[in-house]
Length: 479
Image 1 (cartoon, rainbow, N blue to C red):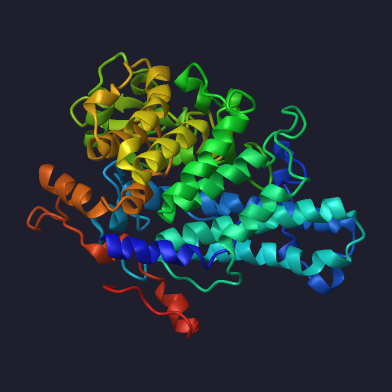
Image 2 (tube, rainbow, N blue to C red):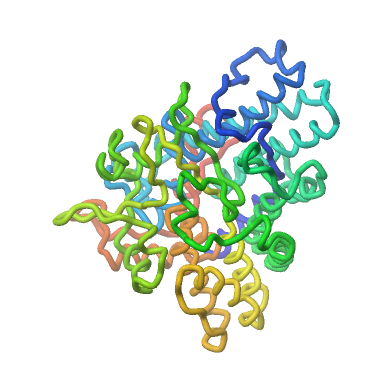
């Protein structure tokens, strides 16, 4: 498993990552015409058209992270395949993720691939045509950093899902470090006029996550230390109340470093589908539209959340129970009253400060077995915010702290799309999932053997239609 994990990690070196900043970050900026449908020879010749193209590249993240007219989102890959959640409705090709019966004809895979490459294409158009647009060098620099980050974020997700994919650029770390050095990317923006614009903390946080995924623990630890030393307290803080992180009335708060933004009630639709996707009925969807039952919390996650007792404030903030004889658990992190079916205000949080603190603890612990006492205080900051007692460093060694951090990440970041990627990154996916399937006797049918996975399941199959049309592509092993 570790060898395959290193194979996945190696692919990151081939990707391009930097920072992206939207031109206007009020939610109205999302409502636009797709400039990739305009003949490019007649467009992108002035600042207004290029600004629109940059925003279109940014809005492509909605299609990737989940939108009624786009892909299902990241949650099938981050949550349903893990021990966190499952699809009550096996249709829409989501049941294949739950049982690891995914084939190259899966429609969720195909839509994700399509929308990620569509977003990459929008970024490439901007980068290829920006040099001739009559705007200041500062603006060009900001736009360039913006779309490079978007393109790289697409590649980041594609590599975690499929492994090696056809890439245009090969400088993941260079692009991020270039963005760090870009004086046009500020530390923070005015919340009233520029809410959602990417900042230096977003760049550093994502770079640190790349290092951690590559198992470059010293680089990750150094970058995360720099992040915390520079930004802790302002502009980045842990909110005192966990539930307030996810309120639609408190979006882009000081704990959120970057999120994919949505806005309900627009035409064309720019709202998020998650309130409806994850609900089991209309009532748990805010009373508007359908509960699609696409992403329900597993009993194992509920047991893990509640094991700390009522003192853990994350329990009450994380889920609601639905039903009596047939009990289902619905996440509360995407709660809103939609304007219409699949049209809510809930943003998808990509990176927040608690994640940074836990990544730092992980990087320190993996860097050296002697770092346990140094790492634990960063875990404790997350725990004490949740109302729990601090861990005692004397009671832990490197191995036991590794598992404690894994558990803390599962609880703290539950249903935010991290669990499966965390398990793969740490080489724990096969053991954790096979133990989970055995514990709950999970079978595809009542007469099927208990589900088990092996190393080939750590990557997903490349869509067959892409292989049929692109001779460069080869199928991942085992599919």
